Image (tube, rainbow over all chains, first blue to last red):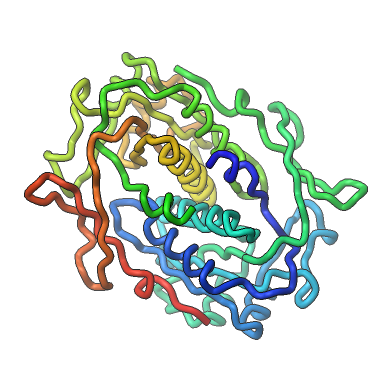
Length: 189
Length: 189
């Protein structure tokens, strides 16, 4: 399990082939039973696989601020073919964001276990997305998860506290993601 | 993977035996490489296994509002022996709560894969916990994760929208957790 969690990296470039609907269904099935505050289950999901709608959704996203424009996917070339919109109340409290994070991590790991990659997107145009996906004003699109077969192989390296945490592309166009070492993020008592 | 995600249930009653330090280390190792906003890695962890400190931490928690007092663990009888405090900035934005939720789900799944149970606690006395764990005023204890070997076997059942989502204890003292069916939480477009 730890191996799978550590193997997962955010993917931004994708193969141009459809995502099996069964895997998307499994991802939602995992999300809906993930821990949530008071078992209130306030999250809802819109799975976008129709190319026309997916293209509209993609147009409302921003990618990888630190490696622009090289890691900016292009529609029809290397953009994710599927998107899962995570909906919550329009006035979602921080705890609902925590619920969303947990549900998204379940989905990312189920994707990974099925050979798919994903990218959790928070830099999104929420109001246009709400209209595109016909979401009621009482709800908002909290986050998007882009899903598809990976067309890149990012790596991560452990670094010490104080080192830059900016991810970067090397000469071979491989994305490197610095992660703080275990001893720098945890203490025992 | 979906099987593991679906098998995990929140555990509130625990065996009174220590949690292997290696598993706790693996949980943190998974948490630290979990997706986070802009790869900023703002979360830190305090792992509490010393009985004296664990008892003090336990005293600052509240459990299972809907099945009080029957599912309230007692220290030294069935309370979790280990706690992981998830620390974040004292002024954590909602996105940091999302980061915390994702990291906590990684930890819960790694615990589950190692035969351990866990309970994500949000109803906690943050200021006393901050002092007990000697956390600087610039940080807060966002959440706690109680960890141990399960001493109960909760079950979950799919229900339709409109049904009560309150969890409950049956005649045999088994906890039942209603979860909205897949078709009630997701739509395709």
